[in-house]
Length: 258
Image 1 (cartoon, rainbow, N blue to C red):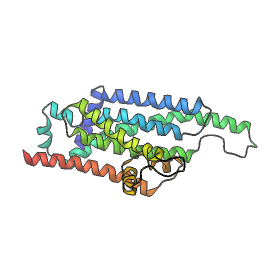
Image 2: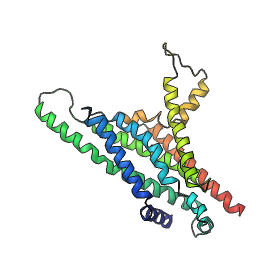
Image 3: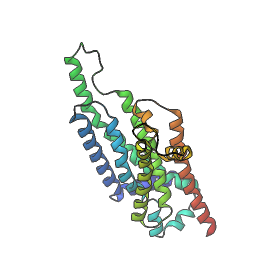
């Protein structure tokens, strides 16, 4: 697994994909943070992280579209499957490399919060008698970062799985974006699907339950408020495990079929 991980990390920087992802991600994060915090004079980061998740739907497939699709296109898939590494190790190595790229970019983007603390400290010094807290709430930022990391892991696991099903990188990216967009929009449909009296328009409880379970954003609100909800944590980890496991099963079947 370590050899696959190193190979994938090296390929991100040999090819322009890694630099393109980091550049786009950091540019989007800086723009969103500036618009929703500094420009509006607000210390709330909830909207920023919420919009960042939707941006991830577009940029995360840049990391995953080539993981297995490129191996098929370059006819190196057979060499990969006959290498002295288990199928699980191969899949985990590729998944962890993509997740490391994402997590590293997210950590670097935390630089955007430094101006908030500088401005908050200055305002607090000028208003020493203020009763309310002035400045960003650290618990909310850390909670949201954990939530975004977990959602990113789910997005990457889905992208890796879809990449294992096709040899065309563009098709893998488009299908991943479509699946992630549906999973994100379902939460909005569930929320706005009510009339003026508050009665839900989705009449079936089973349908509402399925929509809520599939929607990856429905549990992010806990993290936005700085609350580490263990059920939400287990949900994201379970969803990540499911798609990584499905990818393993795809290649186990392909190995035995050959």
